[in-house]
Length: 128
Image: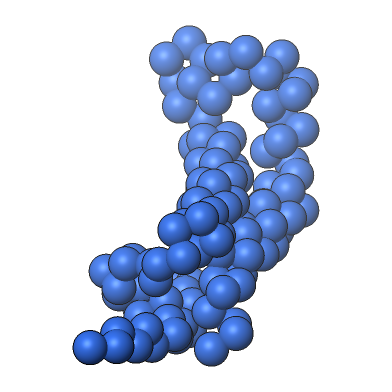
């Protein structure tokens, strides 16, 4: 399946949308961080500013999806081997768990991505 070869780029796309939404929806918190001088602006004086912490982790997760998507693409192109099936099942499980807890979200995108990783790999024939 040709789409399988792009599965890492699909995750990069999900990460990009996640970051873009984070910047738009978290803009007030990002402005607060800058106005507070950036350095130690998440937990000043030992008091956690939850909205600032939330946007920090929200954006960081999107960055990790970029990294994992890039790693997936490098794996496919360099090793010419299928991605581990457990990775796909992990995407499916995460999509289901988060989708159930937060139905109006992009978590559902991880289910087809996971199924693509599990079932989309080309079948390698070994001649005997």
